[in-house]
Image (tube, rainbow, N blue to C red; front, side):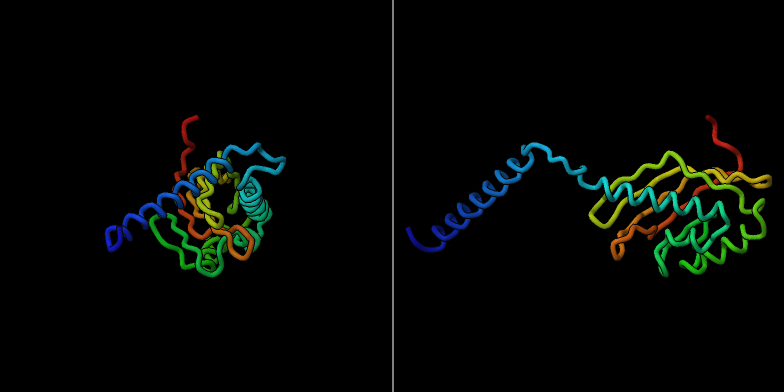
Amino acid sequence: MTGPMHAGKALLATLALVVLAFTGSVSRSASCPPSSAPPAGEADRKAILQVITDMQEAWNRGDFRGYMQGFKNPDVVFVSGGRFQQGWQGTLDHYIRDYGASAEVRGTLHFHDIQVQLLAADAAQLISRYELDRPQHPQYGINTRLMRKVAGHWVIALNHVSSIETPPPR
């Protein structure tokens, strides 16, 4: 048999063989015994958590520039209080203006209940609770963050903060 019908059947048969070969290699690799290497993504998860730890420590010592090292510079998208901050510099200016007067005004920052979900080799979602302990206007809230791996380092590309001044029920 020759002609267009035969060519179409041959193409379908070839595609079927390719699909079978691919699915066979996937199932074989999935059934291989685990290696002693850490699970895929665990190093990235640890690196992301280290970014958050470093940010918390920088805030608590009054180092706003150090805190900002965790954000993508210059084009982080930062949403808080129903407003967009103006990129990296606008966010730094906001922190200095609104929290930089003294240690009492700055407060002590604690991130907790941190959940990291790797979305791709260079993207992750992070959701956490935070508390900003200070004598006046303490804050309690949730951060929703899109983390991106840029030049080998994890940074926050999108940060959304939802906060209240009364502690959540425990």
